[in-house]
Length: 339
Image (tube, rainbow, N blue to C red; front, side, top):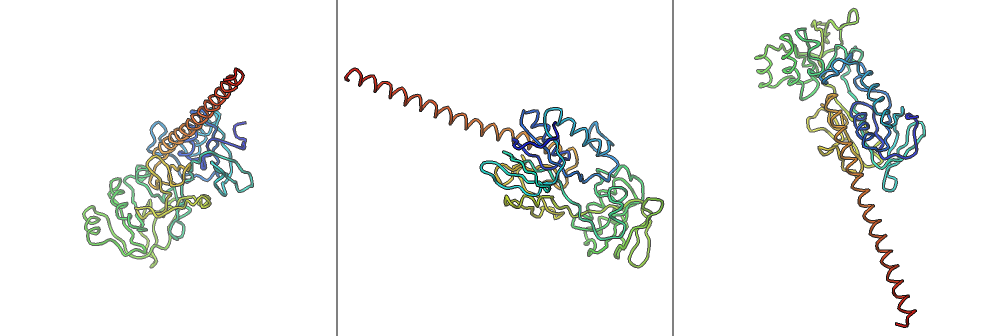
């Protein structure tokens, strides 16, 4: 069965989202033994549909992943439910241990575990996340077009977020919340675009009939809003890599932590590659899938180079042994003839 965990693989893919499944698909098609180990907690699970993905526009995230799993299995790849607890060096490969005690060995690792959205402690916010509490205008802007949108200040990119959402609606309100508020230049930009600035701490969201209807401030004032954009702090799911000396670091944008890699997904730890949101915080589904495909191609190339070196070494050893045997045969012949 293609969902049974074997002992050894060319590649273990940790994480079964778009990046991991597309990487596994590429590797399986390259005739590599590959398994995807997926904890079953996709970041976009609360969303109604995937957007901005050609030929899959609006598809429910769960359906997209199920199709991806079937495609990987169709080429002989394995997809296993489980959570990776540790990854350590094991000779020239890696030992991967799951939380339930199972273990597996890999020649290479592709880490596509994504990230965790750390949200502000505003009452009611988490429950609406991915519905009418949103973060990305390219993912959700069309769905809230021409509606009353709020933007909650949470970090250095919040003003930029408000300016972006202004593209989808003329009714945008910027809530300074616990920030110092926009600086002079930012305030001018917001004013020029007709974006209202509301000061004061946001205490809670008002919900009626299972939809957001307003943002409640600490003083009790309610500002009617249909949607609220929040820039969450994004933190890579990569704790299990600590045994390899690979830890998330602060992203240059200031929006969270990621696992650094070169443009092909290669990390500082030989044999470990990353793709998707674990390394690229802003990657949408299409970009994550593309990152997985590129990393998979680099992994296959890496393995081909290794196998070629091994074949060359074996060939040289064989010819050396044959040469030594031939010399020994000639010497023995000379001795027989008294030479």
